Amino acid sequence: MPGRRALFLVAALWASGLSSNWTMAAAPPPGLDPAGLKAWTQYQKESAHRAFAIAPGGQWGWRSGLTDTEQATEETLAACRQENELACLIYDLNGRKMLTSARWEQALAPYPVTSPDALPPVGTRRAQRFPDLRLQTPEGQPVPLAQPGIRVTVLHFWGSWCPPCVKELPSLDLAQRQLAKDSAIRFVLVPLREPMATSQAWLQSRKLNLKLVLPETAASTTLRLRDGKTLADRQIAPVFPTTYILDGRGTVLFVQHGPIHDWASLVPILRHAAQHAGRP
Image (tube, rainbow, N blue to C red; front, top):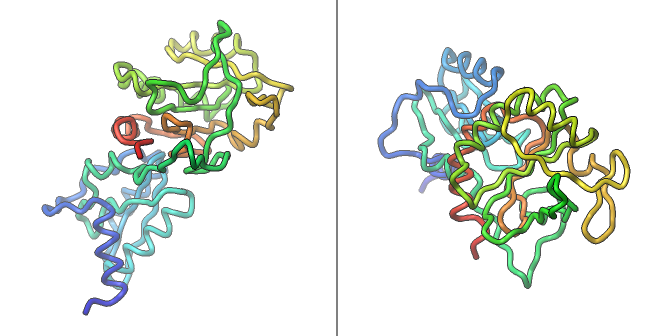
């Protein structure tokens, strides 16, 4: 009868999208930042047993020179999960690609299931109901986070005063253009700690076609909720930039504190979430 570690390995490989036809993982994993790409190059030179894991948003981890594939899988997943709420996925194991494109699309699954009779608690972590912020367009029209017809909302907090924010925005702009025809997905960009006119002028100077949403502030660092209460902006965005992906009911599917280097890697994930998230 198989041992516990053997069963763990089978489950981990299945969850990582193991294909019946393994292929060599010559191409780098999707979504890596320059540090991740450097780590991937180094990883390929290492001896077996080794594994490389990734997660949406660019998190990664790897281990090499381990006793067997079971240990390589277990320790690599643990290394990747140190910075990530979601389950990481094994991309490569001993030079063989383990992650299929179909499994990558489902990286945010299983999706939280909510109902009107059992609403999740309010909060900013995965599976919680995002705080009901008072947001509006520059023309003064309210922007509710739960809106009919919208299946996925990308809620992004940034400022033109923030170097990592402005470096990230061209990649975000490209992803938004790739998804422009999908009316079920919307991007809500909320500039903080600066006037809306400053944010708009910066975007125009870079020829970025990103529409902004204005938060109602009680003070320069305080956001107002629809029930009249307030939150410190650091409770929403402990670092800048901060990104949330919400389903159509305002439930958090994904959180990223810090920049996302390669927004294109999230496009298939957002499309899958728009088709499947929030359904009973």
